[in-house]
Length: 231
Image (cartoon, rainbow, N blue to C red; front, side, top):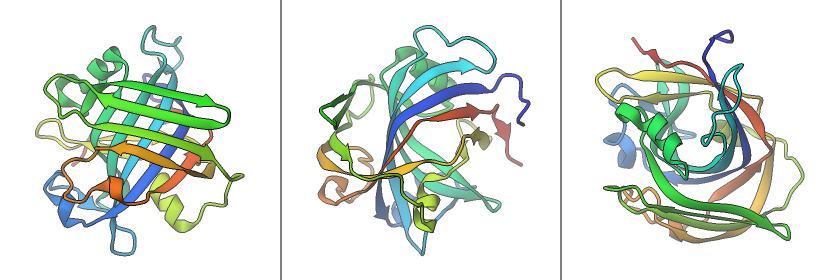
């Protein structure tokens, strides 16, 4: 797999993980039946992950013009298939039309276009995302935060939330797996305020009313490998 000739290469900068506990029952009918919901001590989790994607390219080639850099926000949960753990995405928003078109072709992944800004001023980061994709529910996230810790020693729970190295998707009749490779996350704690959060609108609970478990991560270089059909 490490020698896959056309693996996609990318860098993720200024990643922020926001997590909330949810019931597995609230997710079950949103996930392909082949996948088992992965729980930590009997609880499922929903995650919002935002980052700047940089230097997007097919491995061993120059960056792809106009798709090289963009902002992304995804909504995900954690799943298992035949003992292997990974991620299932409910939505992936990006502010690049070409990235959305490329990754969303044929329903491969649920990418949607959004207007986004992600900037730092005097040590404080501000992220805004407003989905504008035609025919999609207009979900939004507005967040301000500061990184408040030195790198932390990840504990088993934080490792479970963040160290995920494959995703599954089922655009048609086959369950597909995409393997992902990067070094372990260098996590920091953050503090901040979520001003608007209408993401994961399919949940009965209002995530905006509950405090998230939050982490910030230093940049990593990422490889995405070609999808494989699960048997």
